[in-house]
Image (tube, rainbow, N blue to C red; front, side, top):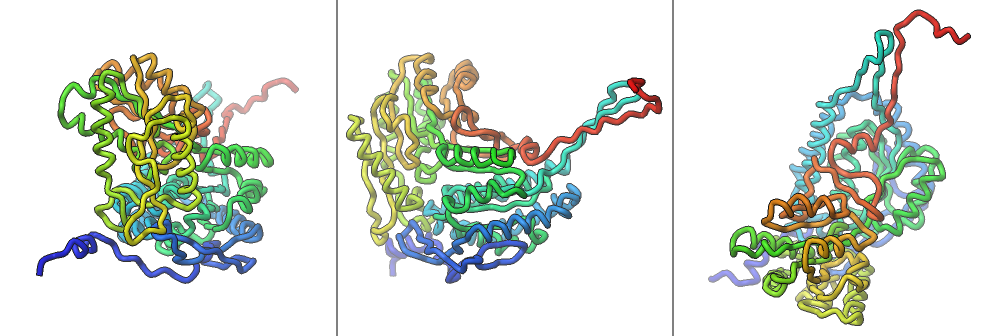
Length: 509
């Protein structure tokens, strides 16, 4: 008997794992229910069905978590870099051993295509732990002899208890981006996941929790509106780190002023992706790569702060280039996110799907031309899921769809005459998180990125996030950086020990 299309599809589709009826917080090395005994339903974007419940925490739960972290810090802060490095590497190994399971859970929680979680999200999380495990072993202190009797020593010390608030677009990876450097630096953490994706990180802690001393990492699930301020303003919290919208970031920053604690913010974006004429000088591998780079707006369903959501193409190649981009966009396979051949999954929540649909309507009302997509998508067998067709609008940079973060698989396309106009359009935004520059010209390759107002400019590539490259925003896209060894300094105090070897007094008194 021949293989049917359905059988072939099933052979590439990962099984839905069995979930517990409910998931508790992870506090002090144990899974514990909320002090209030409440839970909330967790809905998978794949099919709009409840698949488990997560604990609905209150301020008492936060207090318990912060106290557990503060107690653990008394000993964790004195562990050696070697000890911490070994633990981080063990965590990476444990995740790697369970990668397909974790990737599947992440997909069910968030709705993204499992081919992305398998190829990017979870491998990057593994690498992040290994990167920080290595850099803390290689670090050295600073010593400076100021004169024959005076020596300056610079010593780095962990801050203490870190409050980390994680978004829903990369539930595990965004958590790891913050956890790895914080732990490497010797801090303890209270982490609050997004309420729409509360399960991934808890299941991760089921797998790795035994590798950490009790209280070093604590996970408290619940609603940001109820818990965010209470967590950041807790007097035992020494720093806040947040990834999410610019609007919420402003509030987190305000909360941090109450006890004057440092805060890092990775916020929104409206990233320009700029394509110069030379891109089409040849029909070759580079052109193929560039077309894919333009279609990167659909990666993770467009739910990435650095989504290349503004497509800027030089006038003389615009028609020919956008035709290729449309063709590649229409070839995107949207379907069951657990199918490893599917390229784009479901939006993370109904709220997000409704927001995107609102912008699709707005774009049409603004007079933008729909080149492809422009509406919700219906997936056979998953009709209730949160799916959107990848969409390309043609318009101008004054339109709201060019200026406001949509956070969906929507790109706004326009043209430019020359380098000056490309930069003018690219920088005409309140955001400055990411950008892309595509060219075969060696001068443009260097000079254009230098003039783009963004913390990360990809050149002849897009959506690469190596652990050793700093990532963060200009303007209203945030404060501080993620990734790179410089992150250790975001999670440490700098102490100067100024030592005198002279026995003689100064003579003032």
